[in-house]
Image 1 (cartoon, rainbow, N blue to C red):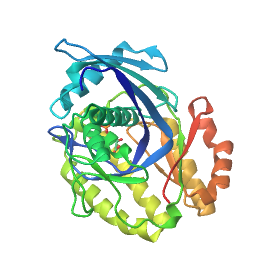
Image 2: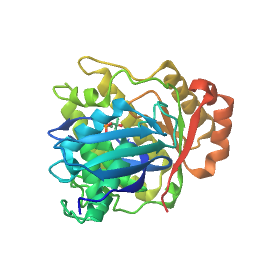
Image 3: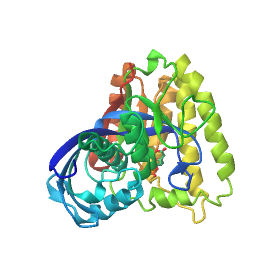
Length: 342
Ligand code: PMV
C-alpha cells in the first residue's frame, strides 16, 4: 500500500575493522575480505517518516538532532539512486529522516557506517510494512546488502559481535554483496572486549575514504596488500578460537599499520595520523613492555586510536588513560565502548 503515511525506526552501531577493507571495484565490491567488531555504545538512531507524493523524483529532508541539514540530502539521494533497482518505492514518498548519534558529531568517529546501517534497516522494515518485497532473503541480510551500497563498511554494522564481509574460502557463507555474522568458535577471552577510542583529532578528514579506496587502483603494493589481508584473516581465525590475546593484538596492529602504509605509498601519498597518534602508540607500547598486559591498538582511516583489550585489565588501562593518554586527546576526550561477544 503506497498511499499511507507513517514512520519506521531503527538503531545501528558503528564498527571497527580488525582486518581492513581498503580498495574496491565496481559498485562497492571489496578487493579483499574484512572482519570487524561491532560496537555497542556508539550508535545511530533513525526515524524515517514517509508521506505519499506523485512527483517523479526523490524527496528527502535530513534532520540531525532536530536540526535540518541541507547538505546531507544529496548523499541520501545518491544512496537512493544506487538502491533504486532493489527498492522500488523510493519515488512514491517524501521522506524525513530524523537521526541522532550517541557519539559527538565530527568527533572523527565515522557516522557513515552506523547512519547508513540504521537507514537501511528502516528501509527493509518499510518494505515489509508496505508489503512491497523487492528484495529476496532474510531481513538483516537485505539491510546489510543495502548498507553496503551506501558505504562499504556499513554492511558489517548490521550484526552484533564479529562480522565478515567479502567472499573468501576461509569463511563459509561469506559474500561480496553483504556481511555475515562470524560463523566460527570465539574464545571466552574475547567476552565483552573493550574498545576505548582516543579522540586525537576532531577535524574533518583531509582525504575521504572514497578517495583512499580509489588510490588503491594502480597502487604499486595493491596486489600484495589484498593477499596479505586474506592471509591475515586466515591467521586470525585460529587465534579467535585459541584466545591468545598477544597473537591477536600483534596481528591487529600489523593490519592497522599496513592500512596506513598503503596511504603513505599512494600516488598522491597522504598521512592521516597526527603527532599525538604516534605519541599514543608509543605510550601503548611502553605500557605493554612494562606490564606484559594485552593492550593493543587499531586505527581506521583517521588519526584516532582504538585501544582493544579484555575487560579484565580495565583498571590498569584506565590508569594509563588518566596518567598519560588523556592529555594526548582533543579536549581530553575519549569514548568507552565494547563489543558484545558472549
Ligand atoms: O566504508 P568506507 O568506504 O568508509 O571505508 C572504510 C575503510 C576503513 O574504515 C579504513 C576500513 C574498514 O574496513 O572499515
